[in-house]
Image 1: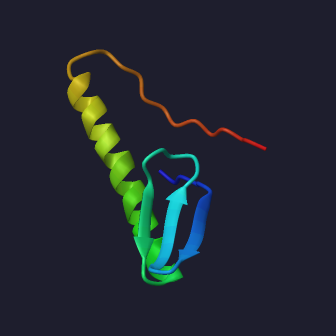
Image 2: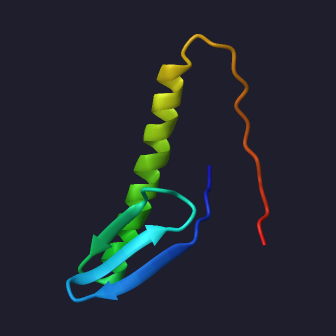
Length: 74
């Protein structure tokens, strides 16, 4: 699965903060812009995988349909 998000980066005295605009809770930091970018990728991956695991556990044994959707937002 490939997910595209809008990454926002802001320079602060301590380095850089970064967040994914479309994913609540996906926020991180880094000493450099590159480090903040890599940390944000890791944070988004972790949030998505954790959410999947939680949903799987919560709905275990229940009939479900899981499908990929492509949604264009302008």
